[in-house]
Image (cartoon, rainbow, N blue to C red; front, side, top):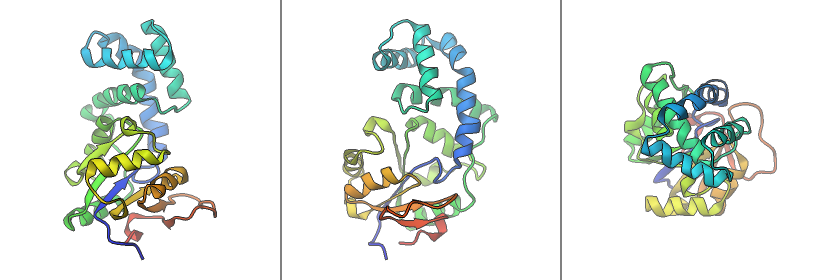
Length: 226
């Protein structure tokens, strides 16, 4: 039985949303449009700031070389912050035009609604930018879920496999670590959260997890009880 929970922090891919939606829909959409998006918007302050950050991270200075490097990062699914920020801007057009609609598992929206009504704080922690997270939850097949969510965290607070990231999130939320529950499908992320004093549940949407990880497990949100 879990200890009392005041806050639930959720991963996205493989937890609330299928991995296939990201790999087969979101990433190809951004990859196809990234070079032209940069050419069209490179003079805008927000995009120029992203490019400056990418130049520093990639060790290149020419804009075209930055685009090539960012495409390379995307192909390798590297969690590089300026790339994630740029992806969010590209996805914005798709979500607002209706070309993109986010997948969420059918058990997610009812659970979030029930937890919200109980006064549980609901947060998202993903490698995607906080803006991309808001777009994803604002345009789902279950409707706009953002009114249920209290906040968003991305890799600007730290990488998801580092314990210090979860300590920072607890400090930012103002919650006792032992009263925070983290839901993810990635063992290394769960290990880091557990080392920060959080409670954890491993979401196993497909297949079976390894036997070595000491985390409670669930295949659906309605199996997560606290």
